[in-house]
Structure formats: structure tokens, C-alpha cells
Length: 308
Ligand code: GYE
Image 1 (cartoon, rainbow, N blue to C red):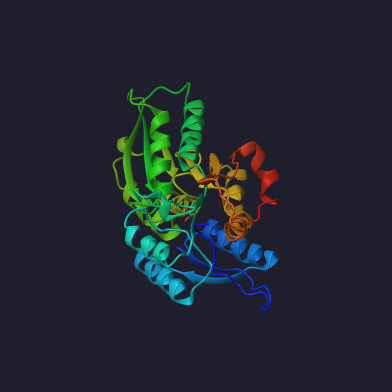
Image 2 (image 1 turned 90 degrees about the horizontal axis):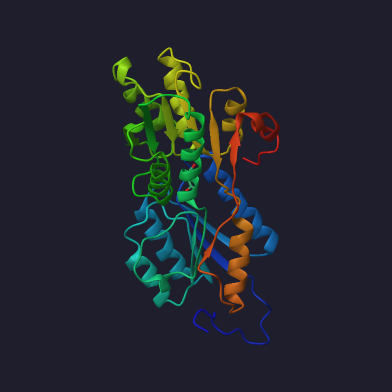
């Protein structure tokens, strides 16, 4: 088998699978929940986890992978900060005979044999859901409707695909126009900073809608909107993605309009994949969790149930 580990001799006790995981950072509640899910699932499945936090640096992810190769871990999982630039590092791991699982975001490589499988959300569909919600909400309101967009990390899969999905829904007939768009790195502080800039536009150019690619940026933007003397959810309708407890709380309070769900609890699927790879089974090239959209009506009930 292509990905079989080195043979173990009979008189050796069964060793636990060693999984090296390069997590991209700690930028959001979603990310923290993703990390906890991986840590807990590893413990529950008896998999020995070597965890490395890359603090949003791809260079640090390269280092982590090289370290995993030196350690001769059994499987490497990577949640990649951006899509491009992965070929060489993945090839090194493949040459060392270590299978790679891509978690959450994707890598853009021509040779897809460089990884075994990808586990992650359908980000395009998330953007579509946000766009659909907006079309519905604005259907009786005459255009043009000005939309501001807070993108996530430039070059990251969720930012690219959420933007594409959203644009594919709002169309090009001029009723809905994205008038402002900039990356804010998926963080609350950047979200606030960039929204502040957006709000410097003269009143007749100010956005009616904000589409934030995650909850943290929406939360930062809400602060900026309030500090500018405007009312979030009223003067500016706000859409975000993830579904953190804080966001659902704001949704219940009417400060957010809708939150598209993105599911971070990928640990169990990752452990299952690691085990199946080690058992020599073939995996589907892609695994996607089911997801929904939260609206104000449902928010109050959901807040208490959220895991992150
Ligand atoms: O939406 C955001 C996080 O890659 C899906 O990254 C993930 C995104 C998530 O920082 O909150």
C-alpha cells in the first residue's frame, strides 16, 4: 500500500498512531474550537498528537511539517493558512512516506497525490447562503444597495470561496453593489480597524449592508459602527459566517442579521481518517460536514447550545 507505515515486529507492543498537526493560528473562536476538537478527539481515540501553532505564518507551517518529518510521525495534518506555495513541503513529506491530511482550508497544488484527503466546509456554499439571505431580505427594497465586505486572510480558501459564492448570488444587474471590500485577517481588531475606514466615506456612499467573512470581524465592525453613532442591524444590516456563541448572542439582540454556520468540530473525522490511513484503507478525496444558516428567530434558542 502506498501509505503503509513501517512494519512493526510481532514482539513489539502496539504503538499508538502519532499525528503531527500544524494548526494555522488562534485568530477566532472558530479556530479555538477546531483546536479543542482535534485535541479531544485525539485523546478519545488513543492517538498521540503533536500540536504546533503557526500563528498565521505559512513559514512556521513549513517548519512544523519539516519537524514532523524529522520526528517520523505516522500522519501529518495541516490546516493551511493560505492556499498557494505548498508543493515543495508536501513533496518532502511524500518522499518521506508520510501521508498528509488537509484540514479546514485547502491547498492549491496541481499534483493531488500530495495529500490523501481534505476535510473541510463548502465555503462557496456558505457565501451562496449569505447572498441568498440578502436577496430575500432586500427583495422589496429598491436598489442600489451598497455592500461592504470584510474579507478574511488574503489568499485563504474560506475568504476566496465565500467571496465567490456571495458574488454569484447577488448578481451583476447593479441593484446590489459591493462598494467596499478589504481583507481584515479574520480578527476582531482588524475588522474594527477596516470598518472604521469604510465608515469614513460620505453618508451617501456609506454601506447599507456588511458581509463579514467571519464572526470576529463582524463583532469588531459592530464596535466601529456603534462608535460612529450608527445602529448595527438597523442602519447597516450585517451578515457573518461561523456561528460562535458571541455572534448568536448579537443575532438574538438584533445587531446581526444572519450568521451562516461553519462547523469547526472536525477532530473526530480527522482521527477516523488517520486510523483508516494507517489501516491501509482508501479514503474519499474530500469530506464535508453538513451546515446551516442561523437567523434572528432561531438565535436565542441556539445561543445556549453552542459549543464555541
Ligand atoms: O471561518 C474563521 C477562521 O478557515 C473556516 O478561519 C476557517 C475560518 C473561520 O479564522 O473564523
